[in-house]
Length: 565
Image (cartoon, rainbow, N blue to C red; front, top):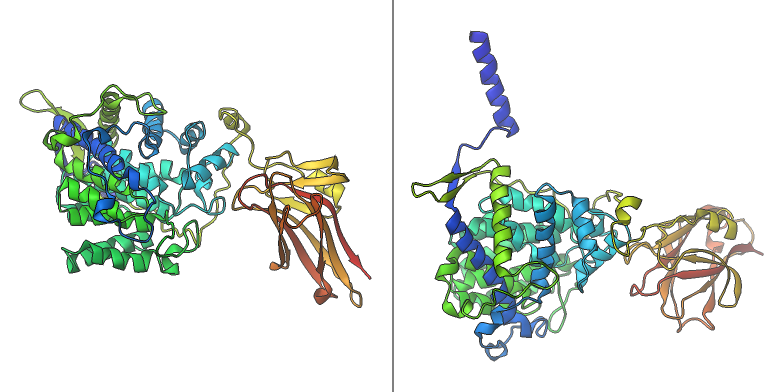
C-alpha cells in the first residue's frame, strides 16, 4: 500500500511538471455573455476600418488634422468588401472545415487558393505558397522582404475571438496562420493582438489587457520593447497623445535600428511605413489615450496616420469586445446589414458569429475546459487558466535557418495555378557551361536551355526563386598566374522586364548591373569582369540572377566564359 501511494505521488508530481494535468484554476464565462462580446469585437473592426478608410496612407509621418477625419455615419459599419476583414475569414473557414488541429500546410493551401487582391506581406506570402514554398518558409525573410509588415497583425483578431481566456491558443494559431506571411516581429504583432482580444472577454482595464497581450510574445523582441515603451510613455504623459506619437515617430519610424531597411525604410514626413511595430504603436495609442471611449479610441488611432484604417480596426475590435454588443452606442449598429455577405466568404454577419461561437466551443474543450449549465439551464464556458507560452525569439533582420519546406506534387495539384517553386536545370547548365552548377532556380518563365532566343543560339534561361532569393550559378576556377584573366558574360532580358546581375568572387560582390532596356541593345549586353587580382588563386565565382521589381525577371545567358591572355 505504501509503495502504491509513493508511486501515485510521484506520478502526480510528474504530470504536474509535464503540464498534462488539468489546470486547478478556471474562469467562468456565460456563453451568452461570450457571444455578446464576440459580436461586438467583429463590429469594432468594421467600425474602425469604415471610419478610418478614407484616410488610409494619405498621412505618412505626420498627424492627421482633426478636420481630416470624416464624421461617423451609421452606414460606414457595412464593410463587407474590406480585405482587413475577409482575409482572416479565410483562416476562419479553414478552421471550420478542417478543425482547430488543421495542419499549417492545409492552411497554406487554402490561403494559396484565395482569389482576392493582396499587397505587402500577404501578397508575397501567397505568391510563395503558389510557387510551392510551403509554410513556415513562405513567410521567412529568405523568401520575402515583408516579414515584419503589419499583415498578420491586421488579420489576427479571429484568433482571440475564438479563444476567450485562452492565450495559448492565440499563440498556436499565430504559429499556424501568421507564419504563412510573417516572421519575427511581424508574427508577434498578431499574437499580441490575439492575446489582447482573448483577455478582453474578462478584463476592461486597457493597461491590463495590453499587459496580457505582452505576455504572449518574447520579451526580448523589439515588438515587446515597443509595447513597453508605449505603456511607459503613456504613464509619463497620460493626457498628451501627440507627445507620445512624436516619441514613437523618432524611435520606431526614423531610427534605422528599428526599421532595418526591410519593406519599410527609416523615414519621417511623407515616408510610407507598413512596419508592424510602428503601426502597432498606433493601435495602442488609440486604446490607451481613448480611455475607454469608442469614438476617441478610433479617432486617435486614425489620426496617427500610415495604415489608418487597419489600426483603428484593431483598436476598435479590442475595445468593443470589452463593451459588448448590447451596450454599444446605437450609431454603431443601427444600420448594420445582416444579410450582406463578406466578400470572398460564405458568411453574412449572423453566420460569421455562429461559426465563431462554434469554434470557441470546440476550443474550450480542446484546451481542457468544459461547458456546463447554470441554474437556469444556460451554457457556461469553464475555461482553464493556462499561462501563455511565447514562441522562440526571432529577428527578421537576423533570421534563423529555413525549414526547407516545399509542397509535394500532390499538394501543388490542390492549388489552382500552383507550380513547383524550384526547377531542376542542372543538366541544361552543364550542357551550356560545363563545370557550372545552379541553385535556387525558380520555376517561372520556363527556365532551361533554348536552341534560339532573341537572335542568339543556345541560350540558357534562369529565374530567381523568389523576390528575395536569386538564382545562382557557381563554379570554382583556378585563375592562372602571369596572365590577365577575365570573366565574360553575354546576358539579356525579356522585353517586358529587367533583372539585376551580380558577380561575386569568394563572396565579395565585384559587379552589380541592371540588365534591361536601359543597358542593353537589341535585348543583349556583354559584361566583362577582371579577375587579375586573383591570379594564382582558386576562387569561387557566383553569378546571381536577382529580382528587380518581380516582373518578367528571367535571366538570359548567351555565354559564360573565363578567358586568359
